[in-house]
Image (tube, rainbow, N blue to C red; front, top):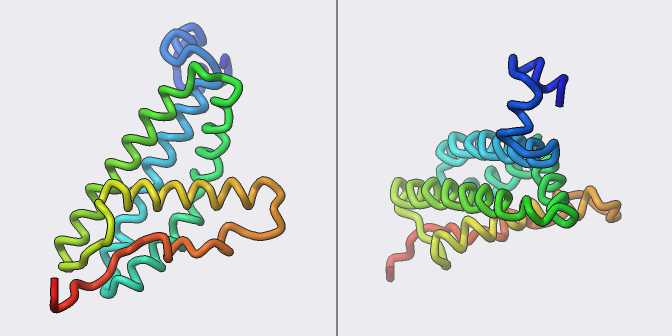
Length: 162
């Protein structure tokens, strides 16, 4: 904490007062990084011209975000530090809302549709991203890219009958 405080130009007791513990600071930092990295998906998705290209680009990029494994580690801390669960929940809610807003804007821009409500689509996507990384980093004989993350998204072109 002293090293972090010195780098931030603060006193260690200020860091402890604001965050409460090193674990809480780690959770805050991990989700701040994840939320920032998630914004990197937006221009990648906007450049795509077809729903298939959109799904594949988002899946590929999301799995390679550097903050994803850090966020998975931060979430795992709450197993032993249940007082941090509300902090994780708050940050996941923010991630899901951010993703929902982005998805809604992309759908409107391209006149694409989804088969589920946008909030469900966003939660499902990010749950699959985080789960894929957790599985791959837990020693499973495979990689996160083995999961068809693009198939989790239901984004498609509007049919003539809709």
